Length: 169
Image (cartoon, rainbow, N blue to C red; front, side, top):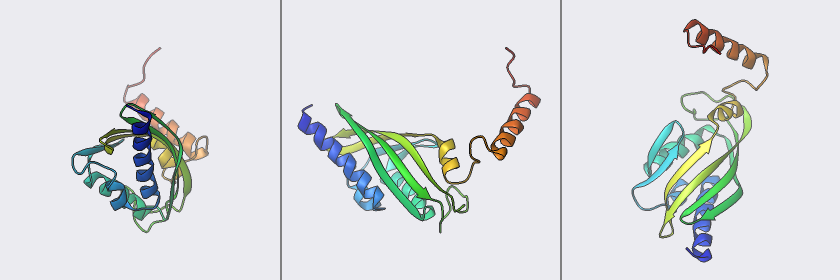
């Protein structure tokens, strides 16, 4: 693979991110193979493209009154481009996110996506981010170290102990 191919692959991935930052799913879909691509997202694995992009990002954009997606860094090798990204969002609605009503919380989430490309188009994206941090960022989980966080951990630990799942050293 030549450096020109790597540059072209990186450019198409950057265009996909720019389209999503602009909330333009139709434009993002044009960066993908016409049918058969896979968007792999934790909790909703192997979403077919284009349906998967519309199904994931459509409701996300409806739920996040404010949303920005920034590329922190890219790395390209062979047929892959890895993107380290940062998303900033405000869960202000009007839509719900995974059935949750808007919390009004604003937060930041970082992650990595590994894109696989063929003939200048994306065929697969494996997205990696900490879903617990996503919950904290948009107000669905308490902040680390807070009283509610400590209470939640104590409750889960008690439940685990009562179920007899605690491992003995």
